[in-house]
Length: 401
Ligand SMILES: Cc1cc2nc3c(=O)[nH]c(=O)nc-3n(C[C@H](O)[C@H](O)[C@H](O)COP(=O)(O)OP(=O)(O)OC[C@H]3O[C@@H](n4cnc5c(N)ncnc54)[C@H](O)[C@@H]3O)c2cc1C
Image: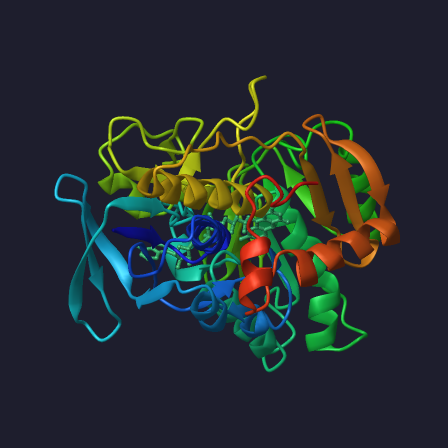
């Protein structure tokens, strides 16, 4: 029997750990139930940190931990999934192809930034979405120091005033001063089509965010979208032109394209609709999880967000349930009642909220300590020690906040 997991992000990593945990509990050998994880690299990209400096350091190795729990790593990118013959076609970086059959499949391919067809965006826009994007932005920012101090060199425009845009923007003044010198006067501007900053975060946290932007001197242009980009900068839908060499696109996210190969219903973000056990209805043997899935997380109408917090726990349930079916034990319905957010606000600290109504619980330095702990400890893979790694993946306890 073979369980194949596609994707080595937070969801894929915890799917592998929890499937291996259940196999171990049931006393079944890796020969009887093979668990294979397919991903281009055997590393976890710590995506929630990609707005930080030195993005090239923001990965964690996975090979040793996978070995310690007898999960087979298959290097490559899944190109096609045939759900009738239960086969996955994988392309390797060297251009070779291989096929892998599955008895159960977990789609944990995550998400990607959605770049709309705005003139100049593809050529001139940067982002902090994937590791390569964040490295390209960092290289560009360092290159600014060698350019003449004109034409908006010290201006950064962040398109999108949601969670990612705010983190990228509030980090930017300090980041630019490190590169351009402490006397530099960087200008950072958030542009958002909505009339309020952080439209999804609600009224409670907004004053804290607005106060942080004021302290850091981050400007906003609200109620206006990005109309076009060119070498001279960015033009907004209200006609304003901002001279800049750096536009960071942080508006909109979609499930990774592989989800389109699963013949099932998807939401507006491209996420596969799943049942309470994270199985894709009507497609036998296929589970979806993390940013690739839209799942109810309680009985009162809340749905998992595209967040690390949800991806980790959903991954643990999906891996457990896919293995449970093969091992003939009951599956567990996914549930995640507790929900917190921790938003980095650069040198203005952070903001910690609890509950779906996002009640502000901590601000400033206290919240910043929590953010640092989340970012440097909680979201990293467990150590490559079999017993501890397996124990870390009890679905009922993963991300139990
Ligand atoms: C800048 C930034 C800040 C963020 N901040 C926060 C935060 O503060 N809190 C929070 O909870 N969330 C945050 N997020 C969101 C969080 O990073 C995602 O929700 C999370 O990474 C989703 O995990 P995942 O495992 O579903 O997908 P991903 O982490 O996207 O991992 C997907 C994996 O699938 C692989 N993959 C994709 N396609 C294929 C294929 N065809 N074949 C093989 N492998 C494939 C990828 O290589 C990757 O290994 C942030 C995201 C960004 C970009």
